Image (cartoon, rainbow, N blue to C red; front, side, top):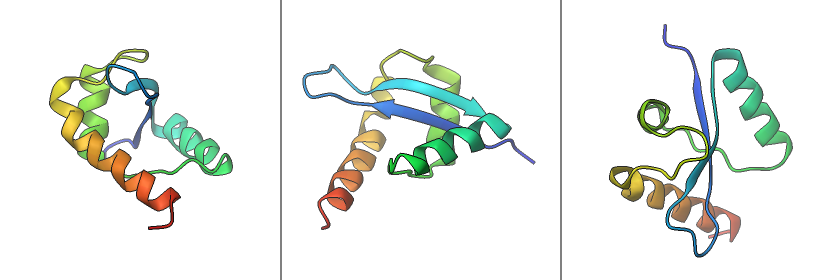
Length: 85
């Protein structure tokens, strides 16, 4: 059984790309997700993307360019959800 992975991203207007601001595995991932829920942060599950980010994007780094499209879709989904669309 694979351990649960969680990655937290941040994007601010004007940034080159989203940044990885947190990563966790196993119980720490469960804790990170619980904190996100408590703060009302939208959670999107994508095990493949979480694995790729864990392997290639250390905390504090920009996400790799080959992840941009997948992350852009997630950010668009979050924006629509927050706007009630």
